[in-house]
Length: 370
Image 1 (spheres, rainbow, N blue to C red):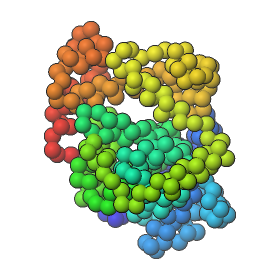
Image 2 (tube, one colour):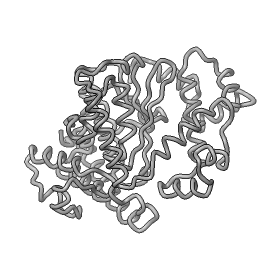
Image 3 (cartoon, rainbow, N blue to C red):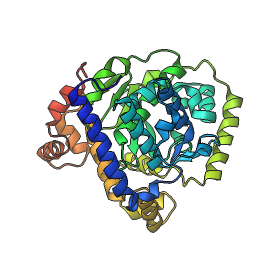
């Protein structure tokens, strides 16, 4: 579905120009720490096949990306920069900034290699999503997923660990759509109440894909996939406990071979979530709970381009946003739960985060529309 209007084409070229500028800037900055073995090559191979179906040759798609032929053949990994450049070429050659949606909609469980077969072997959708979140770093290190349950809904929270990298709108579209597609493939049916929530505004290219995607909400200030808790208990048709045990062991060995640090962000965000009602710990206390020194915690977060204070602020903000979406809670109750002395302080903070009042935010996102 290429860009058909002048406005779409202008937006498409602006995104490409911005990417080229960002690549030049980021390659010489501290962001280079994220540019190492970040994205499994199978996703690039799948994109190349998708482009070939549209008459775009592999040589055209790979031009200027620095991706070598041997990288595509040895189950290796691409850097974030190579992935971004390939996505840039795909947008330019198809004239479609919605290429991330295209990739996600065409994805299959087998795209995810051994992990995909592990997902099919899980007993329930809950088990599969926990496995997907737990071993996502074997497929990409630029996203982190965390499965939580709140007010009758399951929320797969998406944390972008390379948010400043180029072409992230494409990468986020790809990750979100691929994950919802994965849920429906594992369930072997549509999940009509599953939704994607984006922090930012609706992009121009969404309109062309609206009917093919699950319900998508924009300007939520949250980045997550949401579905009813009941869907998590859905049994999967190909469950096999022995196969799952074998694949988990293989994934653990693969993680050790790749020397992946660990699921630090997941553990830290789980820790912070557990302190929503009692007050968030400082970095010294948090580090102790994670069995490391505060210096080590700071260093590990810095390697990911993160810092402890920002994560605490994000945790507090996300907790407030979710409480506001609980229709049985009054605003003064939420203020007390989250440690605000005066509900007016909560309202001021909320307007600063979202640009609207808590009541308007609640009404908009709890409506049936998108």
